Image 1 (cartoon, rainbow, N blue to C red):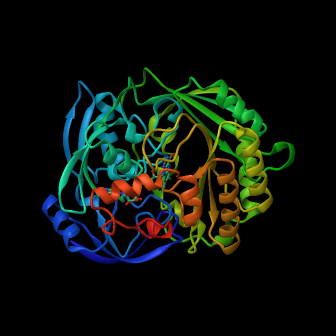
Image 2: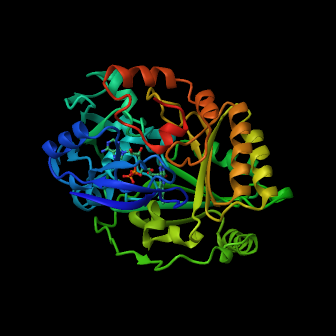
Image 3: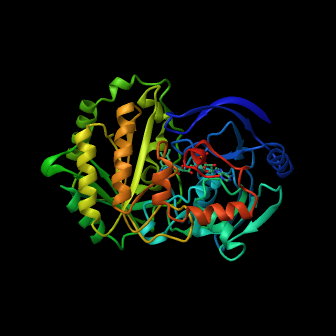
Length: 436
Ligand SMILES: Cc1cc2nc3c(=O)[nH]c(=O)nc-3n(C[C@H](O)[C@H](O)[C@H](O)COP(=O)(O)OP(=O)(O)OC[C@H]3O[C@@H](n4cnc5c(N)ncnc54)[C@H](O)[C@@H]3O)c2cc1C
């Protein structure tokens, strides 16, 4: 199947007229890759910037079959276009859960591997790629290979986090995590500053899940005030997932509705409403995927769209560096509501994987010239601090920032060269970042 469509990332800021090819079989996939000069895989389009945008994209959503599931070992094999939401509805009733999950379930397996996504448990479980026992990959040569941490390991470590630039992931085997119910025991902790928030992450480093909502518009003594949520899988409550269809945002909201006044008001109310040291048991779906309840929430930012910005700074000097960056963001008055702060554990071996031991902050900015200028300033500061910006969220990073902060990019390029990916797999992002 082929169609000409206007596509964009989830932020809607960078748009592209594209030929979208949707193969329904491996043979069709191979033919498309052989017949096309340059192509990039695309899953659910939940990456925010232009990593799944190109003049020709190969949608993996036609590759949507489950292949095998062993409910004794939790090993699940699916095609790459199967979504995390599809998987949850099958495996949770059987007592299994995703070992790592991002903040939306509308993500394909291919996209989760290509971005090497992380969840609220990175400090305990690492990234998604670390739970993939093997995968099949269609190379630029038309050959299909199986790769894992022990089989063609250099290709595996380039593909996990490799943003689709090594080939088309066709299928993967994932090791699931056993659970006793579809509920989470949740504790809410209020922190009055960024220092207190980071102390609380440290104090809860043994908790399976931890994440904080942070008020990026608060200044002075309130700078970085946060509501931390720590969670553990509950052992009772049953396995009913209670998945509801999302309510939708039907049209683009006038961007003026989201100004610094409304966002400040929202943040103030959210912080005031949270109760310190509150314990409760909550269903798994709204805990992990709060935004999935509102279909098309990205339209709230208006037609010009938005950029999501996520950076990580290393643990050493992490708290003071976070204060410096938050001060810049708060002074700009441009930050969003619903900004998210997390603590990361150690980096892995994947060549372009984002996480490294330290603190990470993700927030939205309405797209505008001044916002983009601010992001370039933040990029420079993050780079000097030894951190980096997440590629799956990125829409503006320069080649020089990328090459300074993703220090293994040359090894990545060498692997791409070896496996026939150079010139064959390219996205608008990869061209902007100066990858071949
Ligand atoms: C509300 C929301 C919350 C999120 N929360 C988190 C979070 O907590 N943690 C996190 O890490 N991320 C998070 N993300 C980002 C999201 O998990 C990633 O962008 C993910 O890659 C999106 O998957 P997708 O299927 O939509 O892929 P796309 O957006 O379609 O593609 C993303 C990348 O994957 C590549 N790709 C897709 N399919 C294949 C394939 N078959 N073979 C090879 N390459 C492929 C594309 O080329 C592209 O480079 C969030 C996104 C949203 C919208």
